[in-house]
Each structure stands twice: as C-alpha cells, then as structure tokens.
Length: 207
Image (cartoon, rainbow, N blue to C red; front, side, top):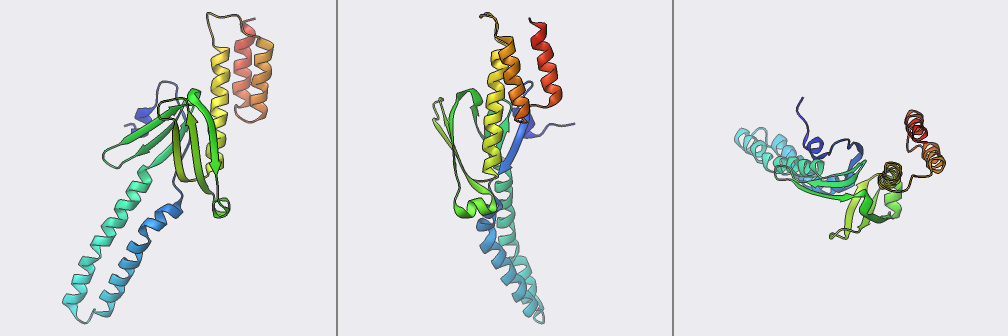
C-alpha cells in the first residue's frame, strides 16, 4: 500500500499523535464570496432559462468561481499541523510542498491565544518558542488548539522520560524514581496501562 506524503516524512518508530488544520471559519471566509457568486450565476441562469443561449453561457461562467473555490479547499486541506512522538510538523502546498518541523526536545515554551469566539467555536493561535534558528513557529487559527498544545506537551514529557530511561554511558538511573515518573504518566493518560507494565518490566530487569 502506497504511503501518504505525511507518512513519508516520519522517521523510524515515529508516530502521528494528532493532526489538525486551520478552523473551518478560515476556509469559509475564503470561499464565501465564491459561494455567493456561484449562487448568483445559477439563479441568473435559471431566470434566463427561456433564453437558452444566455442560460448556457451562465452555467459555463459558473466554472470560474467553482474552480477558485475548489482551489481554496485544496490549499486549506493540505495545510496541516501535526504532533508526532518526536516533532511538531507544519505542511503546506498542494503540488509543491513546504515542510517546517520543530524537534520536541528544542521546544522551550508554548503560548496559546484564544479570543472569546475562539473559545466558543474551538479555534485559536499556537505560538511555539524553540531553541532552533527559526526561533518561533506561529500556527494561526487552528482547530482544537487546546488539544494540540496538550498533545505536544505530553509527547515532550514522554520523550524526556524515554531519553532519560534509555541513557547509556552515564551513571545508572534511579530506577524506582523512573518507575514513579512512569506511573505518573500513566495516571495522566499519556501512556496506557500496557505500556506502563512493559516499560516497568524493562526497568526492573536492569536492577
């Protein structure tokens, strides 16, 4: 089975935790005038139906705003914001692709901004401050920003735990403390009961 473009971006053992787009309000704002124009042309064509050539020209003319609307939908659909087990990825472009990603290890802070309407309808801005050269990534008016931020911070916390537990060439880790942290992740719902038991067994085997 052929991989999607997003799946081709993933590294080994990297999984998608959450994927979202800009809120549908953003899309509606871009296609509103095109929808109105399509409605006007179709209504005019129906009124002019007795004048057959005029009606035909009207139906042909509706192709222009229709193509524009489909183009806006494709652009919106292909602009995605993804949280994986290792990175935050932003993709854009229908045929030519632009990809910006930030390693969770380099994420220093996350700022969430929501207006009153944003809280009512579930959209907002996410600003990610990183230690990379890009400095700041701004995701504007994305859907479910609270869930996006939570997924990202949980993934970062889990990644930090896995890194600490898997360190080699250093002093032996405090396994009871690691198990306690692991249990805390389980209680927060970041990892499942099965994952907790598996990693707990791996840590106990190192004692």
